[in-house]
Amino acid sequence: MSQEFFSEIPKPKEFEVLTKRIQQFCEKHADTPRIVLVTSGGTTVPLEKNTVRFIDNFSIGTRGSSSCEYFLSQPCTAVVFLHRVNSLRPFTRHFTNTNFFELLVPGDDGQIMVSQEHFPKVKKNLERWSLCQKDGSLLEVPFTSLSDYLWMLRVCCEAFKPLGSKVIIYLAAAVSDFYIPNYEMAEHKLQSSEGAPDIQLKMVPKMLKPLVRDWVPDAFVASFKLETDDEILIKKAKKALEIYHHELVIANLLQTRKERVVFVSNDAEEIIQVSQEEREAGTEIEAKIVDRLIALHQSFVEK
Image (cartoon, rainbow, N blue to C red):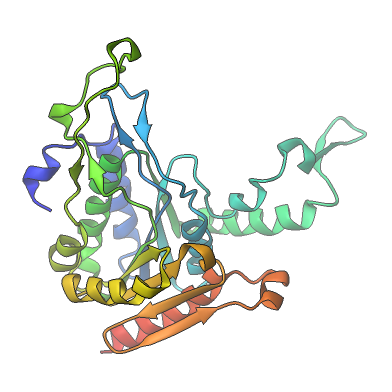
């Protein structure tokens, strides 16, 4: 991904502020044994500079936000959570399907309290979130568009580079394959009175190659491969390893992604799955993914 490409896409509005926060976070955790970058949610592709219309995808950040929680539950671990604005976030994700007012009840003295039904879950997640705020182990960095994401991904990786092999890059975001260069984008809202727009999308250069080779060459990099056809899933995962030379592809089918994934490395294929009984008991597959990934990373560091 060349500098020429980055010249075609705008920087995020708060680029300098976010960059400083990321650099300060890395400085603070220079001695923390494990640093993780989790990317989460989907990127938009704006059709205008003053954006009204855009291309989007279905990702709401379920895997990234839940994985972030499980990384934070590991000892001696700090996480940068690079997430789509308004997508699911760690700890608050447990309440997204709940009407806010259903969580609350008015007290006799005029105070507002959490309802007895929801109190245990609210207390548990509030305590976990508060601990992350107290020890500074979580930094949340927002993005909306594809260009926001790519700029901040590069900033995060370049800040992580001096931290070497203790870094895990966990690429769970759903990133667009196409974009419109800034110089070809309409300034204002496309007018329907002018008929259907003639828009030519360009392919986004694959960011894994410079990420692995230049941005964080010593990090443990795990990418995801999502397909709908079981017959090509593993083949495409192996092809990605061959091209980009990173450590792991987590392969999953759209239809079964919440129950089963396959860890594909240069040495092995390993199935990670949760049973129906485990799911009914509240076990999420991301808990098993993170546990296994931590073990693989430990071996990676020891080598």
